[in-house]
Amino acid sequence: MPRPIWSGAISFGLVTIPIKVISATENHTISFHQVHLEDMARVRTKKVCEIDGKELGWDDIGRGYEVSKDTIVEVTDAELDSMPLPTAKAIEIVAFVPVDSIDPIRVGAGYYLQADGQVAAKPYTLLRQALERSSKVAVAKFAWHNRERLGLLRVVDRAIALHAMHWDDEVRSPETLAPKTVELTDEEVDAAIQLLETMARDDIDDYTDHYREAVEEMLTAKTEHRKPMPVEGGTPQEAGKVVDLMAALTASMESAKAARGEIGDATVHDLPKKRAAKKAPAKKAATKKAASKKATAKKTTGRRSSSP
Image 1 (tube, rainbow, N blue to C red):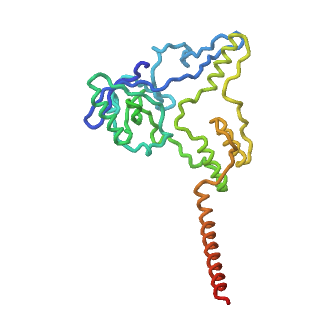
Image 2: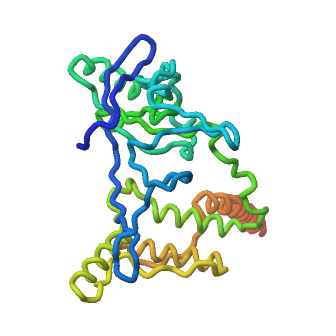
Image 3: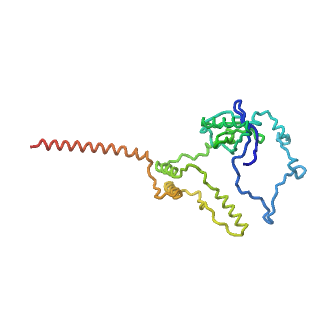
């Protein structure tokens, strides 16, 4: 586990739980340097004062706020740390809500909360079990990096996880992004649902970053003076073409079935509910027809038996 990035406490009501915050994710992105193409030397970014032109070190640099064009006031870390916020050293739970009430677009980076010492074990376990049994998540406020933030606490296995959240006014409205009304047939919607069911999975644990693998192979090949080996992941698809929806859906289902090792044509069928609705009237008609035949047969038999 990496080193804790923050220490403080969770508080809800009068309960306080000392915790350490540990990052729940790792960044495996391959980083590149900026270089001078002529000689491949590193290109550095320097901090330079725009008045005297001197290069500055980190000890020479502070924080300032521009009040007006010609006026900047200094703000120190000590001043920010001493602000009278209840969340300065605590993750303060303000509400417990159903998980479905949280818009996923507001949820950000994830962290694990570790109980800090034996004294924290009991209240930590108490909060975890309360969240599990209530099927709720906790909404909290906390102050990191000189700003107050909104957070979400949930249970992951036997640990409590914290997700940073965007404030409501930080989320842009998507209303203007939706396309204009278009006409879709029932067959197209049914085919899309069938494709969804074909691609359904219980988890997403075995997906791989093929792009990173390809970059790593390219870099290895360059150092070994050879051509890169092909990396699993398939050929990139061309984008931007208008296609026949039904043909695309059928082809997608065939591909999905092949990927899962299933055999057979991916023919688009009506959904079960629609088949039942279509068959019901047919059964009634068949019943009426059979009853009519029986009635006719009885009349014929009656006429034959009464004739001399």
